[in-house]
Amino acid sequence: MQNLEELSKQTTEVIVIDNSTDAESADLMAKLQKRQSLRVFRNNKNLGIAAALHMGIKRQGSTPTPWL
Image (tube, rainbow, N blue to C red; front, top):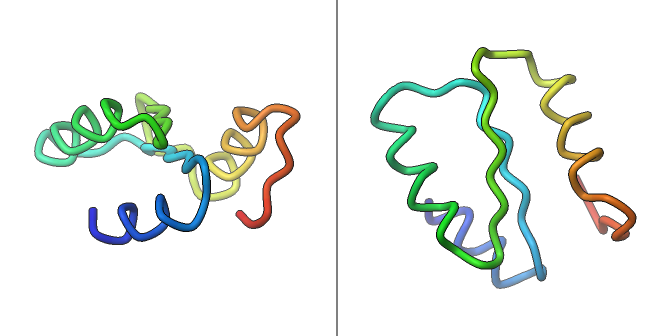
């Protein structure tokens, strides 16, 4: 959570891909979704890092991304 807060200070938007977390993490993801600068996308199962990164790239749309 602290890392996401620091990232939010450095950019206008942070995209989080949740690769199927446990119940405790799901609560955290629900809280994150309420923040304006964070967009959270959840998968029903762990698709792996490559699929999660690809999903993040697709979700960012036409907005240039300084880093991934």
